[in-house]
Image 1: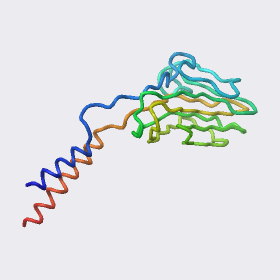
Image 2 (image 1 turned 90 degrees about the horizontal axis):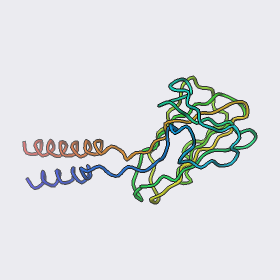
Image 3 (image 1 turned 135 degrees about the vertical axis):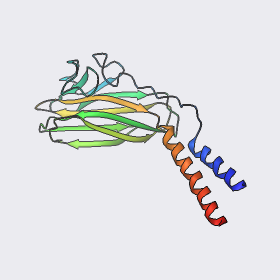
Image 4 (image 1 turned 180 degrees about the horizontal axis):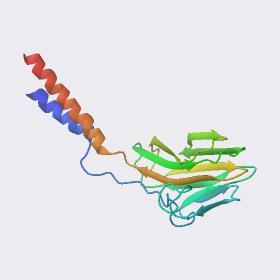
Length: 189
């Protein structure tokens, strides 16, 4: 019986606390303010902006999206994500729409780590959704996007950062308990 108690304790330890962890602070990830509020523009800022045409082919979520078309060099946006717990993992996601122009480039970086780096990405009829599990190396970490698209525009929308769901960790813990109980019953026979 002590083994079952140990397995149950292990399951709850793996599952973590029942209370929700604080969410990180990312401002204006959907550009719904109609501008770059919360973001700092970097590099070549010509032909960069926010549009609010409403739902459609150049908006992934909500009514607005950001567009980028720097010519000859890269330009982009950056924001320090705050409210992070040093060493914890987070899910970072965003939607990207390339137009197939050449030359063009797109990159995304979290705390100096390159998550995606595309050169002359092919045209897409719909937004490409990216999702990464990242680890915070501090309580405030920079998130940056860089673009170049000489002949047209690249679009960014739905930038979000969340604490991973504790329910998935709880499932792992429950599975461990079931595995342990099953093995004990089999060994007892």
